[in-house]
Length: 248
Image (tube, rainbow, N blue to C red; front, side, top):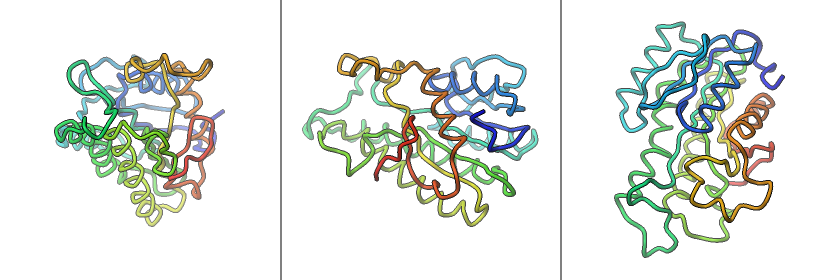
C-alpha cells in the first residue's frame, strides 16, 4: 500500500478538499486502512462525506481561518502524519488569465496569484507544521507545477503562475531545512500532478498530448504513491506524479 511507510492510524489534513484533486485525495485517503481521520479543509465548497472525514472551513486568503483550522485540529488530537495543500489558481471566470507576454503583466493579478499559490500555502505551513509528528515519518506537501522550475522554463509566458510556483518551491525548501531540525524523519515537498482534467486546466486541454490528460483520481493516486515513498533526503525538493524530481 502507498501509505505503509507511515504506519497505522494516520491523521491527515487536506487543504483544498473541495477542488478536483483535493476531493480525489480525500476520497482515496478515506478508503485507506492506514488512515484513521481526515480534516478536509475548504473555503466554501462541499467535501467528500465519510465517517473518517471532518470538514473545516479554511480560506487561503484569510490567515484567521487557517489558524482556526489548525486550532480545531489540535483540539481534536493534534498530532498529524500528513498535510496536503491541494489548492491553486491559474485563471478565473472574470479577468485573470495566464500572460502571453510581459505587456500583459498586471500588478493586481500578480498579487492575487501569489496570495493563493504561495502566501496561502506558506501560512498553512506556519500553522500546521508545528502539528506534525516529531517521532516518526511525517509529511507536508503542497501542489506545485513543473512550470515553477526556473531551469526548465524554455517558453516564457504565464508569468504570475510560474513565479508563484517558483516562490512556493523556495518556501518549501526553506521550511524543509527548519523542519529537519525538529524531526529528522519529517519531509516537506512540492508535488506536480501533471495536467489534470479540472477547471484549472480546462481552457488549455486542447494542447495536451494524447494520454497526458489525467483524471483527478489517477493524479491523486499517483501523488499518494510518491508521498508513500518519500524519505528524509527528499525533503525540500519537488516531485512529479511519476516520482521524478523536477529541477529547481
